[in-house]
Image (cartoon, rainbow, N blue to C red; front, side, top):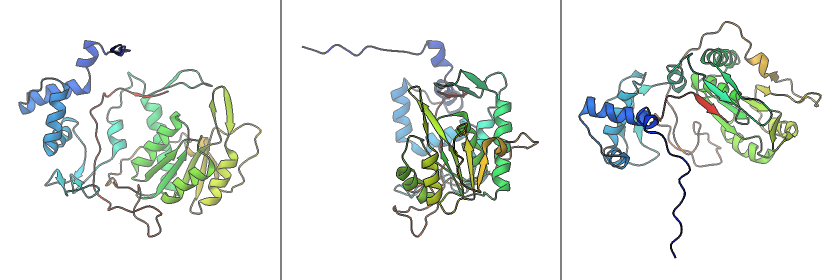
Amino acid sequence: MKPNPPRLLWSPSREMEEDSNLQRFVRWLKKEKGLVFHGYQDLWLWSTQNVEVFWRTLWEYFNITFEGHYDHILTGTTMPHHRWFEGTRLNYAEHVFQKYDESVPAIIFKSEMEALHEISWSELKKKVAALQRYLLQSGIKEGDCVAAYLPCIPEATIAFLATNSIGAIWSSCSPDFGAQSVIDRFAQTRPKILIASSHYSYGGKTFDKTEVIREVINSLPELIKIIIVHDIPNSSPIPSGLFVPWSKAIEQQEAELSAYRFIIPCGFCIHRAQPDCPKPSRTRTEVSYWSISNTSPFTIM
C-alpha cells in the first residue's frame, strides 16, 4: 500500500515568485549575460558547475561596495584554504543599510511577553551608530571579539550590526545554554565585551540567568565591559565594576554610522588563531558570503 503523498502546506503566489530576488537575478542574467535557465534546478546546476562565474555575477548583481582590487574570484584548492575576491575588503553592515527604506520597517518583533511592534530603519541606524561609537570608545577594534548571551530580540540585531560594522568578531549563544556550555564557547574567542540578557521567557515562564552570567564573567578574564539587556526588577545585581546597562550603551546622542571595511575571517575557529586554542586553528582567509534572498525587512519572531 502506497503512503499518502505529503500535504502541501504553503506555496508562494505567482506575484511573490516574480518579485523575489531569485527571479530578479534570473531576469538580470538573461538581460546582462545572455543566460537563460529553465527552472530552479537548471540555475542551481549552472551555479555549481561554474562557481567563479556564478560568484562574479552575484558580485555584480548586488552591486557590492568594496575597496581594493581582485585578479581572481577564487584561489586555493581545498577548504579552508580557499580565498574569495582576494585583495578586497568590504563590510556587511554597510550593505544592510544600503537598503535603508523608511517606507517599510527594518525589524518586526513579537515575543511571548511583548506585543508586536516595529523598529524603523532610522531608529535601527541610530541605535547601531550609538552602540558602534560606544564600542569604539571602549577600545574595541577590528579582530576583537564581542560575545552575546542573548535571545532572538532586536537588541541582538543591533549589537551584531554595530560589532560587524567595525570589523570586530561576533560570537553568540542562546540564554537557554548552561554556564559551562557558554564558557566552553566564549573562552575560545576571548571576548572583550559581553552583551547579555539577565533572563529570557519561554512557555509563560521567566528564567533568571544572573547566576550563569556571574560564572561566565569569572571565566573570561579579558572582559572590559559587560552590557546587560533587560535586567530583572528587584533582582540581585551582578557584582562587577564592569557592568553597563544597555540604555547607557546606546544613549541617543549624535552619532554617525561609519563603515570599516575589513577582511572576513573563515575557518574552523572564528577568530585569529591563538597558540592555546583548544580546537584546530585554520588559516585566516579572505571570503565574502552572499545569498540570493529578498531585500525584505528583518523579521525576528
